[in-house]
Length: 82
Image (cartoon, rainbow, N blue to C red):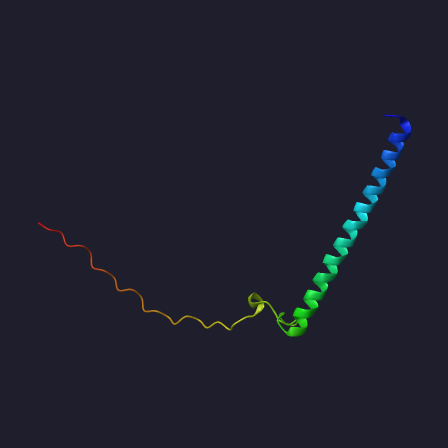
């Protein structure tokens, strides 16, 4: 293998790497645009939750105090058996 062949091979490798990088960027952009279109379509159909909705944990329900319970009756001491 001579040096010119090695240089050509290195140049081809660089071109292949650049081509693969462009291909990857293009695929990433298509996926991103597809996701944006999907979320736009879901929002237009009304399937997405409304923007002003608050999470259920943030909603408060007025709590009432529990009714007072009668004190437990005292149990008599155990009988001793003779």
